[in-house]
Image (cartoon, rainbow, N blue to C red; front, side, top):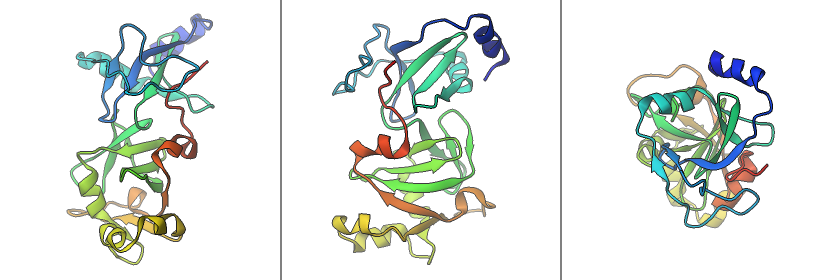
Length: 217
């Protein structure tokens, strides 16, 4: 968090929090909602989700990236000076992207994810990872490469295994451990270490991964 933000929080500790003005898209894009209508605190997330407007300023995006955090209740926010701006999460707190190789992951705000504690697959075929920074959705554009790089601890490609299983069989396989295998260079430790694969309907993932999609006071 920026030093100037920390100082402003100490100087003005009682600035009210705000809700409904900012969202994080499934593509990892910060989006503004000038009417404050991203969602209504205390209500279910609206469907379809209002898309809002992309933030064009690179300086503002970088400021949000540096001052992005989470409270003890799993509500994610942008600390805008002394004011906490709670964020609607369209998919997860982080969107995870690949680097030069599918075995290297980083978050949408530029943090290197070196440790994956668990992989999650939902009923829509989307892949999530629990990292040292928090839970993240593998970006749609990078998901094919990550699926290709994931192997069981016995060396079997994940995609080959999934083709051999019926959907009903997946939750009954708590023994599955996955590793990311580098395709061009070996990634020491970190995300290459084995981690369990778990399965959950998309609707239950926020609870399982400990985040609040539409925060309330």
